[in-house]
Image (tube, rainbow, N blue to C red):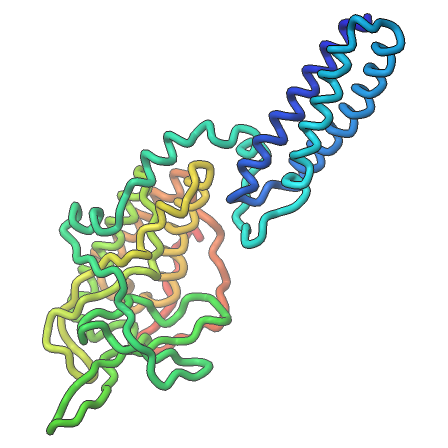
Length: 333
């Protein structure tokens, strides 16, 4: 009976050590859930009480079995080393991980590397798109509500529409640096209040983005719709009117920040943010006026719904609308 109790206690000790080791690894980069911490501490306390009881029994009854008692006590000391890492979260760690994935942490490491190799520059080249690591230049005359940004090389601007749903996000205006009669001055090229209506091929750009999100449903591709940029193709002028190209930036592709167990959540988040926030809060005017764009967005919305990835529409904060910026709401959302 004593032998069976020792075997079961040693098995519990191995489980506690394994959980502590996995919690330590996961907690280095991720926020270990409270349920995991509580489970570990309960099992650890149970193991300490049980092993100490058995160790005393073994030592008092048989000096020949002291090696078993030593093993039980050694497991207690080893498991104790993991207690601080289980109870304390590392500073700066905010990304969560589930109980299950904490327990199996590291097993899916190979799969993580396989999909995270995607590089924004390589992605742009593969899709015959422009790439610019950073498109924002210096900021001028900023105030609490408006962020005035100098366009990089007078032609690269961030494709960041007026409404993003955040209460703390200032509205954005893009300026060009010009020279006249030997004097340098800044003039506003574009702002979000007109929903980029000065871009004459805006429909084609939105269709291109829609196709990218369509492709992302079946691929390990995670794109933030508010991290794209535009390259102005015509001569930049004040109040720019002309063509533009969609640009991939270093922050557009989020693969390197997404863990394997976060893929489905991230895929759902970004496609819904594209449909409801990027499009739905800003480009209702052009969508309602263009049948092709409306049909393609409807098809994407239906695909997302079919895949059970559709979220309820977010209300948003600080949303403003005018003759250019209009809301577009998908029928089933």
